[in-house]
Length: 226
Image 1 (cartoon, rainbow, N blue to C red):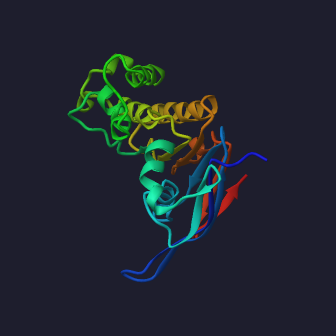
Image 2: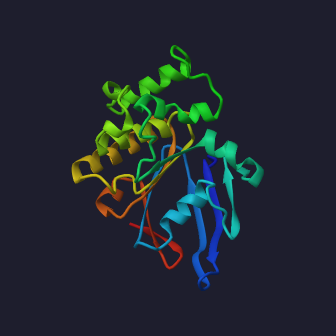
């Protein structure tokens, strides 16, 4: 049987201030290569918190994560996050005074990989910009890019270190309907073509319908949507 890229087991998250709240009650989720998952739900239902836990940005109150069949330990999370997980956020999180190309190369720099012109990583970054349709913007400062272009650059950056898992938190919340659909289709294309797992958190059920599996996060639990 195929091993999941990510396996979440009995994930719970409780907040105690200002009053006790069981935001996530018992989350179980497996993510396999080439599989795309959408998680929908009302604002405040815990979607972003769940995604942060799955991406090792936040610690659950209880439960455990496995990546490639191995339990995630606290002393490993920085390496796992940099090498195995690609994040895409609604607000892009690009460095505005850096070029599109420089932004794409940031994960590689963090991993201390050679990014000099002519290096394999430099070539990879240019190829990723080509694949997302922004090669002609490689040397533009991020602040001069449109919203749709910024999100495409953010996708290229997320793929820079060739992660196994892509996590996208409301990646099209700041875009119009046409650009939103293009971005979702692009994410799904990369998951399928590059053998990656993909989880998208979104309010848009029409866009969620493009994914293989859809879940509603409600009352702290994931409900499968047919």
